[in-house]
Length: 105
Figure 1: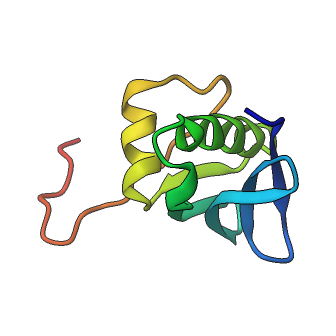
Figure 2: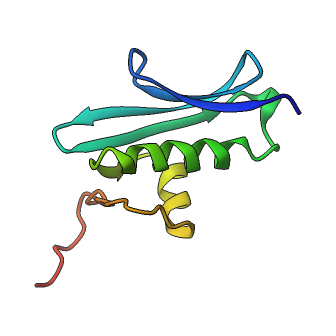
C-alpha cells in the first residue's frame, strides 16, 4: 500500500485521508464555539476494506482533541469508533436524541 496520510483541510471543513496523492476519503466537520461536530465520514469505494476509515477516525479525533474543543459525534461512524476506542484528552459531547428522556440528576 502507498503511504497513507491524514490532514486537516480547514477550507473544505474536513479531515482527508490520502493514499499517495489520491484522496481516499474524508471526515467532514463543523466548527462551533468550543466544539467540533463530526457530521459525515466517507471512504472511496476503491479504498474500502483496507481499514482506512479507522485510520482516518483515529487521526482526526486525536487532532481534534488536541485543540481542546469538545468532540460532538453526529456521524454514525465516528460515534461508533468513540464507543470502542479511547482518545486521550478528548471531551466527548454526545448529541441528544430527539424524544429521548432527559438525564436524571
